[in-house]
Length: 399
Picture 1 (tube, rainbow, N blue to C red):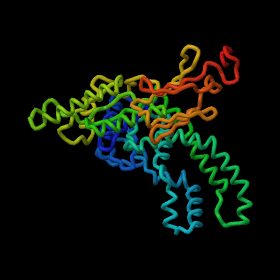
Picture 2 (cartoon, helix red, strand yellow):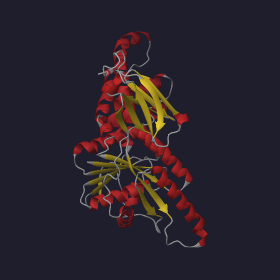
Picture 3 (cartoon, one colour):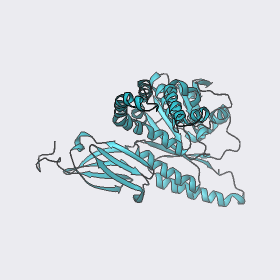
């Protein structure tokens, strides 16, 4: 199964491009589903037909879906919510306030991940296209697999064990609700539904991210930051889509300054994002609504390219041997040295860029080697490791 994620600043045309790409994939005979993970759904508007939280046929070989977190909530979160409501009620909140606060931030992204994983597991689709929310929500979505894995592997078992020990004692001393086994079991079951989603999304042979931009300075600046954060979490960008360029047919002198500015921005995008391919789409002369309009738009956007093809092969994380030492290279295009922090803790390399942090479990070849340096080079972070393992005699190869 091939998965394509479309992301970018709000309003750049992600939904239109995702819908058009899905329709073109289906027209080539591929069983395709396009899923919106944006709480402010507009996928139904693009296809000009009603959509719900279950896949709906919108063309031959094409299904579309708008993930509704509220419909997934009770099934996946019921036991946890009941505990949170009880806990908040104990703290003095009334029932309505407790109900509202039990819906934790980030649940929309969690349910979207679960939906992506379930579609991948069914084997029913050749292509899965994700119409992502605007950039900030998308980065929460794509960082969740790392965060959840770290929490479930390290903290969750400890919390469960502590709860079992202290529950009998605290129940004699206070009426404070303590999470029971059913709460922890519900959390574990939900995490199991997400197991493997990171492997799917970071597998460059199966999954690609496509950045959608308009020829505007603020939009391009956000796309550069997004590319940095995607590299941090190991996601592969295989193309940049520049949408709403003024077409050559527009010759009125009033638009000359805009056309010159678009040309300048386009040149900058091509220079900054090289060697990624740049797909171009002109500003349409009418609203892009309905299958016919979307097909015409997709034909202009992709030309002779297969829309599901891997348009660029990149490797966001690699370990290479350089002389007697080893180097870990992490793709961080456009990273600012002032926003970068690198640390080491046991078998993990900790990397923070701006507000985002990733914990990278080091491969066996590096775990026993000391870090000797870190530098930004070639659009990435190079972390150097000693030629011999810590505690090994010099020249023994370090195992």
